[in-house]
Length: 70
Image (cartoon, rainbow, N blue to C red; front, side, top):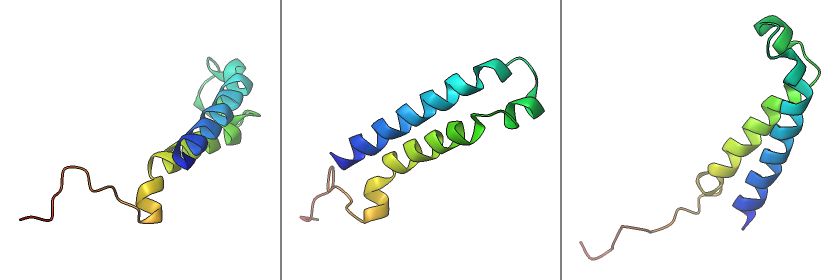
C-alpha cells in the first residue's frame, strides 16, 4: 500500500517536472539541465525508484518462491 502511494507521488512529481521542462527538450542538454523543472523532474525519478525499492529499504522481503522445507 505504501509502495503504491510512494510510486504515485513520484509519478505526479515526475509529470510536473516533465511539463516544466517541455520547452527545453529541443534546446540541447545544457539548457535542459538548467531548466526550471529539472530538479522536479529528477526528484520524481528518484521517488519512483525509492518506491520500487521500498521493501528492500525497510527489510520487509516477501517469501515468494522460497520455502523453508529444504
